[in-house]
Image 1 (cartoon, helix red, strand yellow):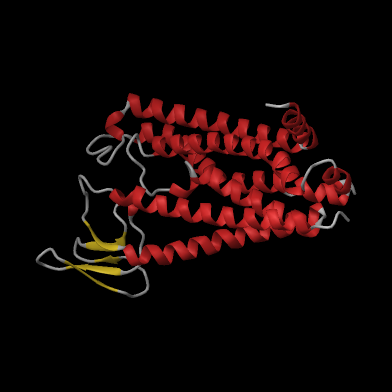
Image 2 (cartoon, rainbow, N blue to C red; image 1 turned 120 degrees about the horizontal axis):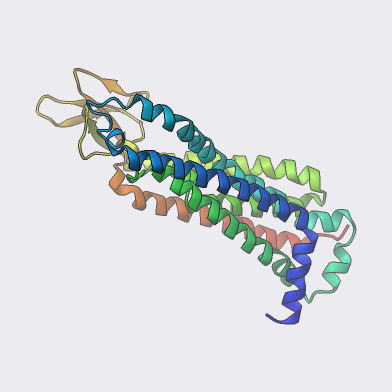
Length: 309
């Protein structure tokens, strides 16, 4: 690392030390709670394996075990939901002030004049922050993955809360960060940019979800359900159509209102089997990366055209 790069890295951390401290404290609290919940759930599962899994508790009184497990399971569920919001909060808090604060405090002209180009200035200012953001959120994503595994009693959770864990956590943070930077450059003021960026991120995530669900509906297949499937995991099923199981065992479906049909011990859904988890998640990861790259290109263009005041 040369002196110039080292100087820019040090400056980036100094200018956003408050935001970075907030990020670090929130991530540390999340990890502490996640480790505790995973540990307690795994302790109960190891001590009482007969009470967990697909046939857990079959013919055995597991009420005391479940009473001890439920509080930790609820904590794990809360933490998984938190993994949806934390990346957005981190991205907004770190992304909005990067340029908006410089413009708002009228220091942008001096900062830009000391760098060969605004693009190089932007890269030097953002890369250290992005590195910290990705590393921190990747750790949160791993912790959320461990929570999902613990809640599934060590089995593959498949599609259950798949967008609240793993690689989707840092991707959501990067999307929020890029959106926050773009609106920060556009408004040149921190508070309006923060509110506008939050609205933009929510709109992007809703649009991404609707688009992906439409795409997924075209790939959905009829999945028959039985009372206690020994090998089938229903975690991959998303309800789009009613499905009828015919007397000969074949499956027919009729597009209606997306509800589940229950008959004489027969039921079915339209969805994706758990075996297609990676096939589908790779598509969603790719779509997220495309959106992030598009926003970043707009950021690069906006900072070159932005007036200092």
